[in-house]
Length: 115
Image 1 (cartoon, rainbow, N blue to C red):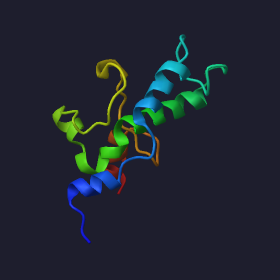
Image 2: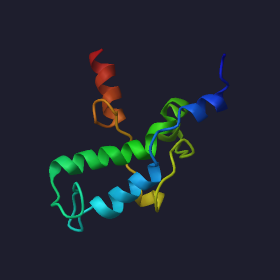
Image 3: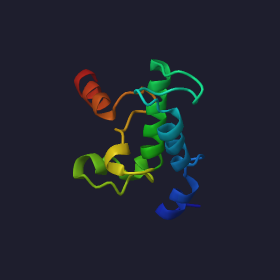
């Protein structure tokens, strides 16, 4: 049985609440002096800053990647983004490659120059 695009979208939704993840990262994990932490009772550190930013990127960009295929980056249209918690002009982060954990633009440059 072949699925139409709408049915495929419904079956491929991410298995977490992207708004709640963003909310936790921005309200609980963020340190007032900069950086991110594991949980509010812990100090900020580079490890948790990196992985919180990665989680924020996944929460904002992941579920529609294969449908959008860089539409937002090329046209400025953010309709391909997941729901964004708070003010999109200040809370949005760049899209990272979920495997390499670096910005997708850098992955594209690397692949175009070396492969």
